[in-house]
Length: 175
Image (cartoon, rainbow, N blue to C red; front, side):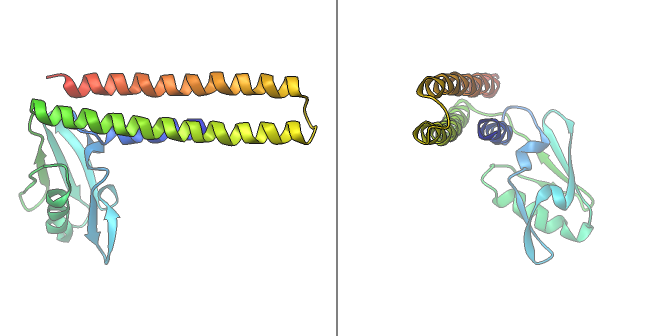
């Protein structure tokens, strides 16, 4: 279902927003120049978090160490990787208040994009319902009943996005 897909997309997007603690999902957006193409970091290395303020990246191929380090540095995450010749350690500095507020703004923008996706799905289904009524495949009463159900479903999904936003916002603002 399209609304469920939109909700899942928001969940993935929210996971990439940095909080005070390290998670492998922080580096999901990093692309590495490897083997002649841009590849997601998780396809060329193992990413784990041995401690709350550190991400450790272990490449499958040691020749990619420099490329992975460069990709993390040039990403817009503001992280400074350290290469020791075998693994790359990425310390996660604590967020300052200004940076936390920037992340909250990004979260609000992501949530609004999710709401737009849900409204778009609602519009598509509503058009299908109107078409069925117009073609006399269902009655007007049934069409109205389905529209009411669709409206309730839309509110449920937007409420879920709002709840996810509130939880993630609290996580980002927690010191």
